[in-house]
Image (tube, rainbow, N blue to C red; front, side, top):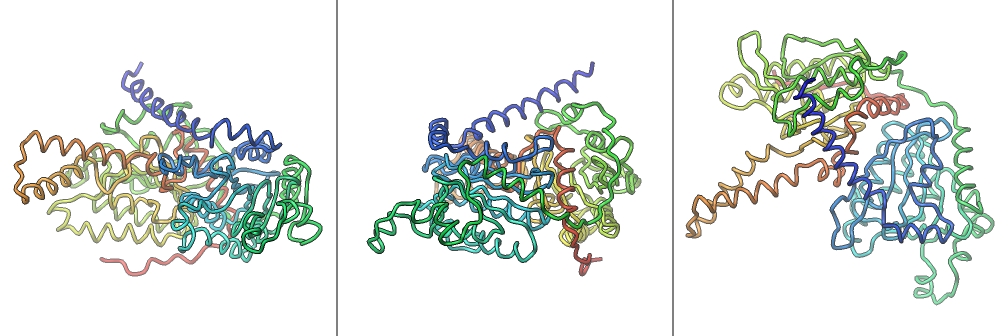
Length: 542
C-alpha cells in the first residue's frame, strides 16, 4: 500500500466532491418552485429538454455550467448563466446544444449569458458543428441592459453570428418552446428551420403590453406571435407541435437527414485503454500541489497504452513533448514537468518553470505538429518563465517569445487542460484562453493568476504599507501581517477554478478521470472542420 498515493487520491477526490456539490446546486437552476411552474404549463426544464433530445449511448459534455457562479448576488444570482449548453449527439450527429433556462429570471440574458451563448457559437463556427437552440427567454435583463446590449461582444453579436454561420454552411435549428422576445426574435428566424410549440411558444418584437403602450392595440400573445400565427399567417415558422416531446422528435428527424460532413483527416485508429488502472490519475498530484510529481504518469493515464513517444526527451526537460494517441486519435502533447530535473550541463531546473531550452524545444515541437497536421494537447501546471540574471543574459524573453509565437500562429486544433498552476506568461505560452484553444478545461486543483498568491500578496502589501507610511501612519509588524493575510485571502479567492469558470476563462471544471474523454470528444469535433489555414510564424527573434 502506497500511503502517499492514498493521501493524494483522497485529496483530489475530495476536491472533485466539492465541485460536484456546487454543480448539484447549479443544476437546480432557479429552484424547485420555478421548475414546478414549468410543469404546470406542460413545459420541460432546460436540462430535461436536452436529456430528451440527446442520444443516450453517446456522451453529453456540459460547457459553462459554472458561468455566473457567485456573481450577480444583488440580482439573486444567475445559475449556469441562465443557459444550459454543451456538446452532444443527436441522431448520431455531434452538435452544440444551447437551451435557455426559463426558471432563471424567465430566461433573461445577463452579461454572462451573452458571453456564454457567444462562446457556444464560437465553438460551433470553429469546428463547423451544427447548433440547436432551445428557445425560452424573456430577452435582455433590463436592469443590466447597458452591460449586455450595445457592445461588440454583447447581445447583438449573436444575430451577426447567426448570419455568418449560415454563410459558412453550418446547420442551425431553433425550437421555440417559450417566449422569444424583442431582438431575440431574430435568432430563430435567422436559423435554418424554426419549430414552435402551441400554447407556449411565441415570437414577437414587442409583447402585448408594449404593443398596448406603443400603439394602443389590445391583443393576446398567442394571436400576436403564437405558433398558429407564425406557421399559418406570417410564414415565419416552419413547424408547430402540441407538445415539447413532439417538437424535439422533429429536431431529431431533421438532424438524422443532414449530409455527412467533410473532415480534417486527423489520424485515428482503434482505441486502446490506458495502461494504468482506472482511477490511477487521482493519486499522482499531492494535496495543494505542494510536491514535485512526474507529469509523464498523468500522460500515461490519458493516452492509449504504449502510444506515447517523447520528443527530445533528454533536452529541455521541464516541458514534456511527445506524440501519442487518445481514444485512437493521434495527438501532440505539450506538458509541464513538475519534477526537479538536471540538464546535461549540470543545471538543476525547477519543475513547472519554463527555461530557455524547454521553450525552444516546445516551439519546435508545435511547429512539427502543424507540419504533420496533428492536433495539440496542452497540460498546464506552470509557474512561469525562469527569472534572474542568468536567464535574462541567456535570452529567456527571446526564447519565450518563440514559444508564444508558435502557439499563437498554430493552425491545428489546440485543447488545453489546466491541471494545477497557470501563472503569468506561462499561461500564455501553454495556450491559455487568449490563444484560442478549441476547448479549455480545468481540474478542481487549477489556479489561474498573474503570479502565485504569496508573491503577489507580498508585493501588494509592500505597496499598501508604503502608501500608508507616506500619509504619516505608523505600521507595526502585526499590522503588516494583518494586511498581508487580508490580501492573500482576497487574491486566493480570485485564483480558483470556480472564479475562472464563472467568467468563462475555462469552458468547464472537469473530473480528472474525464480528461481523456473530453479531449477525445474535442478532437472528434475539430475533425469536422476540413478548413485549415496555412501555417506561418512570422518573424522569430534569434
